[in-house]
Amino acid sequence: MEIIDNSTTENNEESPGKTPRPKWGVVLVWVFVLGLLAVLGIGLVRSQRGSIRVGDRVPNLVLSTFDGDEIDFADLRGQIVVVNFWASWCKPCEQEAVELEQAYQLYKDQGVVFLGVDYVDTETEARAYLAKFGITYPNGPDLGTRISQAFRMLGVPETYIIGPDGRLAAVKIGPYLSLDEIVNQIETVMAEHK
Image (cartoon, rainbow, N blue to C red; front, side, top):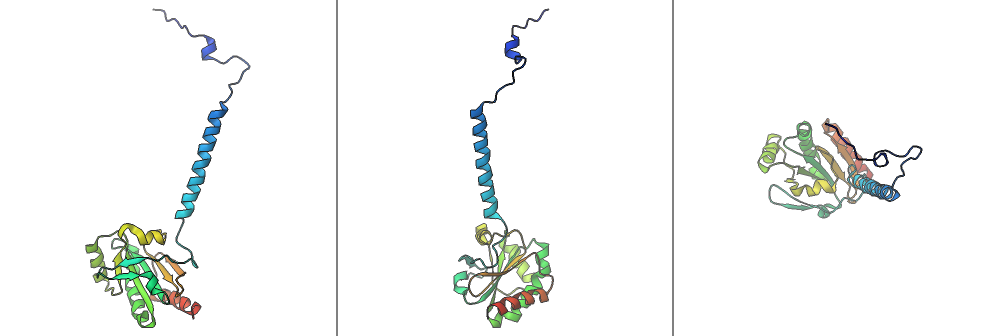
């Protein structure tokens, strides 16, 4: 059986000495698309990058506590507020839980407010965690991750200390390692806002 190739060399091969020319319209479209994607990607990364910075105004938020109270951050202006993000499934959170409660007991009569924000958890597990570590300061779930998104939280645990002026005064990413570390951070913020 003989196979006959009816194609010509003109269709399969380029003429010797000639290089194929790019189709400039296609090249320009691809350059535009890639440039647009780069600009959008950079914008997204910048908008999601890291936690809010010290000195930034903390947005007005409302935390609904497990006890049914509503705590409006705007109502706390004039006070130092310690906001701790945690979860019952977070092992590093357990390392600092007792120390945070001890710090709360030290400062609750000095006008320092402690708030716990439970991140991506069930209420049953969260309440068990609070009972296990004897935590008595107000805590509530971050329903829809609205509060953690406002702080641009990276993970748990994270703690934010808000000054009386409503601006972020200090940030702790990861667990506190001791009560002294918490006390030092709160004392520094208190000294800065006298």
